[in-house]
Image (cartoon, rainbow, N blue to C red; front, side, top):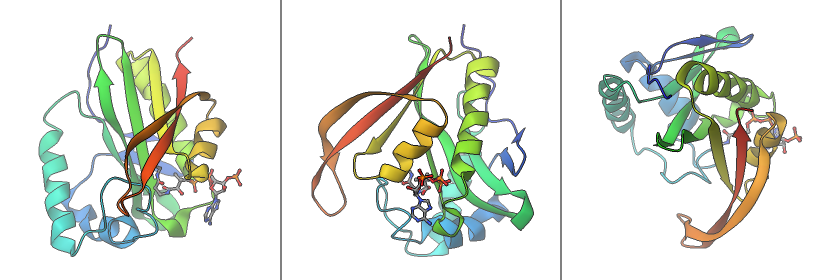
Length: 182
Ligand SMILES: CC(C)(COP(=O)(O)OP(=O)(O)OC[C@H]1O[C@@H](n2cnc3c(N)ncnc32)[C@H](O)[C@@H]1OP(=O)(O)O)[C@@H](O)C(=O)NCCC(=O)NCCS
């Protein structure tokens, strides 16, 4: 049975995964929401100014009222700042499956931070919430994201062709990875 419990804090060695707060606006704008390179493979483009980021965070804060929302800020303890996000982007309660997505700013790439966050989130979703299947997908060109999925023990399932258009108009394929709670 799925038991929705919402976004509660999770602590790992280097990170605290917690709810977004209005005061995270500047960190989010600076670290990832304003950076074209970081957002290259995401569906949304850079925020034109910090007010756009602020409104986005306010809407996320409002959404936490809903217990089936899982959307964590990734707070890096050593730097005392929020460096990215990790969330459930789609959920199918009937199948007990969900899809996760993540992003951190490029100054923090290459330190296996997302794998640390994703392992903790998968544990939460399997053992606290009750999902049986966790999915993650990446643009086939976004090799780095696929590496994260492999590092946390997800298995490549298939490639889905022409799922959408990148912001530059080109069609893209996604590789789908899955982890079951066995
Ligand atoms: C993709 C992403 C999640 C990887 O997170 P990370 O914590 O940097 O991951 P890792 O440190 O485990 O590195 C994963 C791979 O990234 C690549 N990488 C490492 N450092 C890098 C750097 N400084 N610049 C570019 N790529 C780098 C390497 O290919 C690495 O694989 P390897 O460990 O086998 O060499 C992160 O780069 C990111 O948030 N990117 C922007 C948003 C995004 O693309 N999200 C995923 C959408 S599906």
